[in-house]
Length: 345
Ligand code: TXA
Ligand code: MG
Figure 1 (cartoon, rainbow, N blue to C red):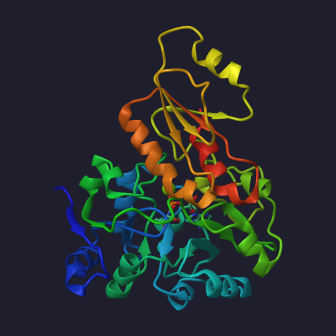
Figure 2: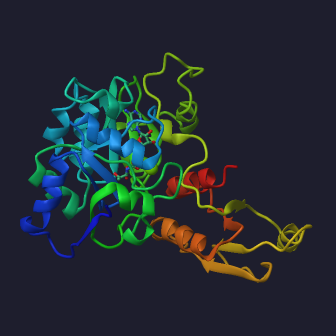
Figure 3: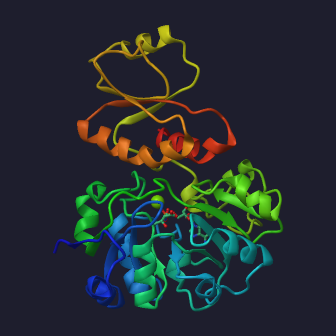
């Protein structure tokens, strides 16, 4: 049965959430807006419900889920211990696009954490998600509401048929204001590290708790690597390696490519390719015909538009999406990460 669509514009009256809350408590899945991307949520304390998330997404059981809670004290209730840094970061950035990985206690079902000793927690900064969490009185496990490996939805229109069929309700609050996912910070080791760059910048986190381990230290934490080359490491973030956030079209990152090479590249042999271009500057040299889309030169605005643009280009049915790679600067870290992973073959 297809999901029921509930449109919410202002603060949701509790009557609007009555059906979704009942469905959640009965073990059904809901599509929920957050400030980052839409999530596919289930009662985190109900292993059968959480299992439905993995089935609906085709997500490997080895990739743990983020648990969403209404506030810091609900987060602490799921943690074995609450490091001082967790308190500092939660106080500063929750509700907000920051996910904290800490040791879990036994109230968290194994399926949520992929059997691991840690749990990822966040308080979303969205009035619908928060109202739902408060009304349901239960933590909500929610990955992004896309089939595994594909682009995360930032609008209800992006939802795949498969996700629509799996959910009991879709709560439509319009476009997500952030546009890419939360920053995942691992607090289980001696030095905190970012497992996945995201909307909250590294600088903001470091300004409060000091330097984080460099990015490549976390890149070793392979997903598909239960047999990690670093078995002593505390936590891996399975979503952080490999092709991900990927549209159907091939994504080609363009870095400092001379104009003359561009045309040559696309005219090499075979049938003409259907090409889209996420451009950061004028591209008079693009091969024609080509859908050129000028992207914002501000990282926040770029992040807000990125997934929507990729989704729209995919609907056009392209072979290749060329992307002007934004500069290697801190403010672009999360966007560059998503583009790189979308481009992996
Ligand atoms: O913005 C977001 O974070 C969105 C919204 C819906 O909240 N959620 C999201 O969930 O992006 P998902 O499942 O698509 O990505 C969760 C990331 C993955 O990279 C996963 O491997 C990592 O968090 N993760 C979850 N639990 C973990 C744990 N215990 N240890 C390490 N990494 C974990
Ligand atoms: Mg995801």
